[in-house]
Amino acid sequence: MARKSSGTILQEELYPPSAQPAREQIDDARLMGLDVDEESPFLRGQKRVSARRSSLPKKTASRLLWATLAAAILCVVAVAAGAVYEYGQRSWRFRVESSDNIEVTGMQNVTKAQIMEVMGADIGRNIFFIPLAQQKAQLEQIPWVESASVMRFVPNRLKVEVHERTPVAFARVGPRIFLIDAGGTLMELPQKHKYSFPVIVGMNPGEPLSTRAPRMKAYNELVKDLDAGGARYSQDLSEVDLSDLDNLKVRVNDPAGDVLVELGSSEYLKRYKTYVSHVQEWRQQFQKLESVSLRYDNQVIVNPDMEGRPRQPALAASAARAAAAAGVKPAALITRIGPHDRTVPKPAFELNEKKLDANSEAAKKTATPAKLKTKTVRGANSRNPTSQKKTAKAAARPKTNAGLVHTSAHNPETKKQSVPTASAHPAIPKPSPAISKQQSNTSSD
Image (cartoon, rainbow, N blue to C red; front, side, top):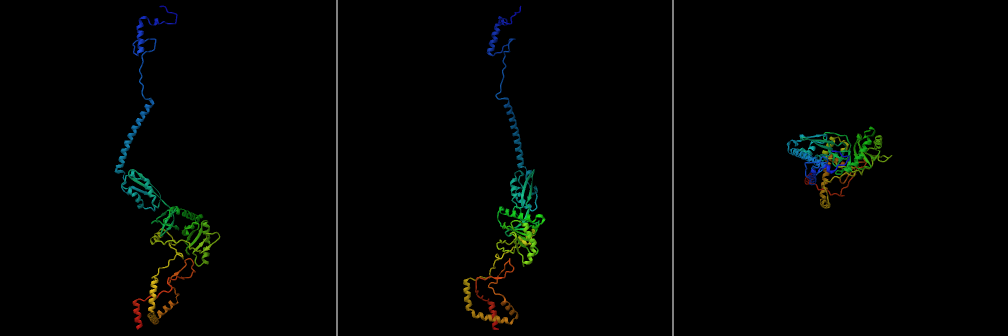
C-alpha cells in the first residue's frame, strides 16, 4: 500500500467500517462511566480511578493524635499522684512521733519550752499537713525571737532555725526591769547570761513599739557618740533617762557618789568631757554633788532644781534580785524620791470634830484629878534621878504637834521643818485603867 505524502490521516483510515460498532461502544462507555476492555492505542486511558478524601485535614488529625496521647499521659500521672497522696496521707511513716523529731537551732536565751509551746501541737500530725508559714509567724511572736524558719524533711522530721534579738540596754518599765533591743522590743531577763548595760528609764508600761522606737534611736546615738574614738564612756553610766528627748539625762556611776548629768540633745561627748574634767573641782566647792546641767552651751548649773522629774515606781524585791543577777548596777536599783514625792506617814489615830468635843468635855470634868495625878507623877520622878534627866531632855527638845520631819533630798543644807497636824489643840488622852490604879497606889503611899 502506497504511503501518502499528506500529513493528514482521515478518520476512515483510522477506524475502518468494521470497527465502527466498537467505536460507538467506547463512546457510550465514556458517557456512562463504565469500564471498557478495549482501549485506543492513540488516546489517553479512559478508565477513572476513584479517590477517597478524609473529612479532616492532615495537620488537624496529627494535632488531635498528639492531644489524645498527652491526655492519656496526664490521666496516668494523675492516677499515680492520687495513689501517692493517699499513701502519704495515711501512712504512719510521715507522722511526727515526738519532740525528738523536731530539731531546734540558734537558741541561747529562748528556751526549748517556749519553742514547744508553738510546735508541740504538731506532734502526732502528718508532716505534709503542718502549716509552716503559720508556725513561723507564731515563733516570731516570742519576744526574744527576731526571725525564725520552719522546714520539713521527709519522712517525719522538722527543723526550726531561730535568730535571736541583740539586747543593747536594760529598761525599767513599771516595777520590773527588762532587756531591750535597738528597735525597742522588750525581752525577759535571762537566767544564765549577764550584761553590762545602763538602765533606761522614762518608758511607760503598755506603750506601743512606735513610741519606744524614737527613744531607742536617741539612746543609740548617745552611746555611739560617747564611745567614739574608743572612749567607752557609756560603760560609766548606770542609768539613762529618755523621758525628755530634748534633754537626755545620764547617771554616772562614780565611786564618790553617783551624779545625774543633763546632756541636752546633741554634742553628748563634748558635754560629758566637760563633766569629767571638772567633777573633782565641783566636789570640792559643794558639800554634796548630786546633779549637773550641761544642756546649754557655755553654761553649767550644779545641783539644779529637779522637781519636774517623774517619779519611778519602786522595784519589787524579786525583780531587783533578778536584775542584779543579770548585771544591773546597784546604783540603778535604787528608787529615788524627790522632796515633793515624800508621803506623810499615816497617824496612829485620827480625831474628828465629835471626838474632839467629847474629849474636851471629859477633860474639863476631870481637870482636878488630872492635876493631882500629874503632881504625883512628878513626885515619883523626883525620887528617881534617871527619870529627872529624861524629863529634862524631853523638855529641852523642840515641841512639835506630830513629830513629823520633812527633808529636802536635793539640798542637804535645808533645815528640818515640822509638819503641823490637823488639830491645833489636841485633847489630853485619858490614861489606861492600869496606869490610873498604879498612880493612885503611889499617891496613897
